[in-house]
Length: 277
Image 1 (cartoon, helix red, strand yellow):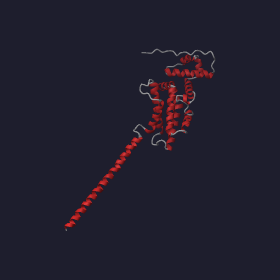
Image 2 (spheres, rainbow, N blue to C red):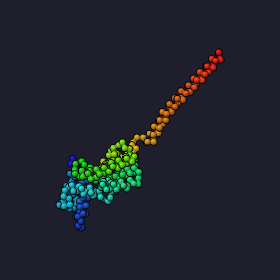
Image 3 (cartoon, rainbow, N blue to C red):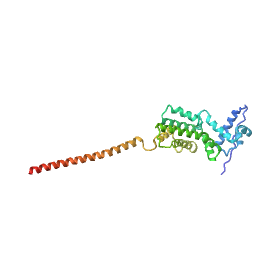
């Protein structure tokens, strides 16, 4: 059954004239909303113009190509009200480093990862629209996701790898694991949580866990794994080692006792024989 397509609601034409930058920003906001609702293939420039209350010619005056519009959306998300409001999609070359510096100097390594997890989770919650936009673009194979990958994902992945390598050299993180896989495993947990809670299961029918708890538990999984607690494991191992150590001692003690008993018995027998003579 084909669903009826509704036209985007046109914005009333403003009685006050917008500046070029204001109009450009308005078009970006409208385009972002429509792309997130319908996908890139399902949204035309005519519909963007109608929803923005401008002519289609105005769209092309500010953005010669769709790629220019895509770049403007990414830039807008990267710069909107600072990193805390950028859905985690802030400038990985500046915002990511600035964020890392703000927590790295004042906290231990576990705290760094926990703050990073909380930051991304909170940012995703603040801008579900952008998550939908990325999914549409990735599935449609559009230029937008490729640009986002190059401008945001790769620099962030490189930063994470460099950070992990530095901590491996310092002895804070085990060095037998690939630094890229450590970073991707951590980010993967965060992205799974955001996609399930915000896109696939917004009613939270699967589970309801606070952002703070999720950030803490993901960090614990990263640093300690999911096996029984280290204390329990070490305790069990120590107990087994003590048992292994005690067993030979007990056997040796028993053997010495048997030897003493045999010696006394031999001495008694020898004394008796001397008496008979």
